[in-house]
Length: 222
Image (tube, rainbow, N blue to C red; front, side, top):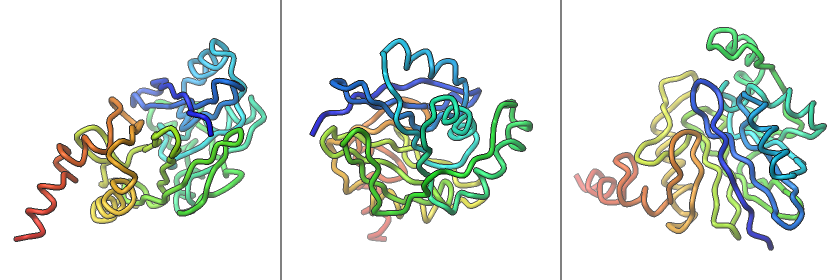
C-alpha cells in the first residue's frame, strides 16, 4: 500500500484547514472539507498536476462544507460524508452562508452518507471511517493506517477539542469519542485538525488538557 501525501489549504474567514491527500505515483487525489475559497484549492490542484477523484466531508459546518457542491460539480466527482445526523447542517448551508460572509455556500446531499466502521477509498488506498459525535452529531474522521495519518475535522486540535456549544453538540459525547475511537489509533498517528497546526495523538494524550491521560486518570480516581 502507498503512503499518501497531504497538504493543507487554509480557507474561509474561519481559517479552516481544507486538506488534499494524494498518491504521488498516480497523482490521484481527494479534497477534504472544501469550505470555500475554491480558487485556492483549484490552484493547488493545478500546480501539483493532481486529478481529484473524491470529496470527503468530516461534518456539516459551513467552514468545512460550504464549497463541496460547487467543487464536486466543477470536477464531476462524488461527495462522501458526513454521517446522516448532520443533514440538518448540509441542507441549510446557503442560509448559514448569508449570515456568516460565505455567500457562495450551497446546500448538498452527499452521494454517500458514512457510518462508523465504513471505509472510503482513494485509488485503491483504504481509509477507515469513525463516527465521532460531539462537535456535531454526524461528525466523522478518516484514518489511513499505512500513512499513519488521520483527517480529524473539529474533533481534536493541538491543545484543545472542538466546541460543543452549537446545535447538536455534546462535550460528553465528544470526550467519549476521543477516548474510545481517536486515542486508540496510536500515539504515532499524525492528524490534520480542522483548524490550527497539525499534531500527533501521542502529543495530545500527554499534554491536551481535555484528554491527557494523567488528568483523565486523576479525575476518575476522585
